[in-house]
Length: 328
Image (tube, rainbow, N blue to C red; front, side, top):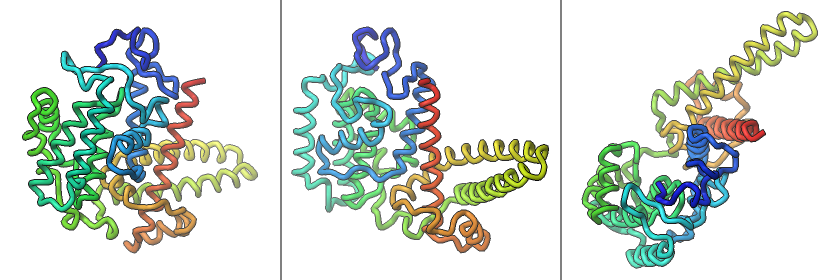
């Protein structure tokens, strides 16, 4: 939270605590919902590659928030604080982070380290980036993604789903206020696994709940297609039946949108999508062919990738349209 007065903060709408955004949203709850959903969608995509320097960190921030804020990927121009404690002062951010990332390069980007040593090192860098807080908003999510990529190239996997929220917050505060990295070291040790011991993405390890959701999503898409065809036929033969079918189509559309949002926020789906390239639905024979393979338990990895990417793209289009409606 900024300690500047609202009027002095150029990132906020005048007389408001809401960040100026591309959707023109001036309600904090609406902005948080939109920002969170777009972040979830962008989190499904591969991160920008880079040299694990300040420019790389900026690129990751822009990747997540470029659809929401004009200043995404740019260093903040105001000082910000949590309570009475300031994060890195704006005039020192570039200098200090460049020094930090030069040290990271000297540390060979944490490669070839045993588990405990790796966790100790990355906890230091994690807390130092957090102390700098180089962006007006979105720092925590950006630094976690940066450290995810750093860990991956060093041969480790950070599973943030395993992190206890209260322990993580306590560790962040300890590192920020006291320069004590032992708490974050403990958190990271509990969520860090060598890559050769994690589930194999190529073989697609699916959690039961997500598999059920995927199957239901495919079923609803087929049902929607069937009802659209029925409606087109009813327009010719029976107007009253056409109205009933239209109501069914609307209901199915709403169900599908909810499932798309749920899939985009599913941690198992996020892990899969980050490791896969978009595969056109048509290449897999459409929902009909995928449905048949699902029914026979013969679904291929490509089927899962295709359906998840389709759901993600639809969800992203929906949030864009929502933003356009709100700004009119």
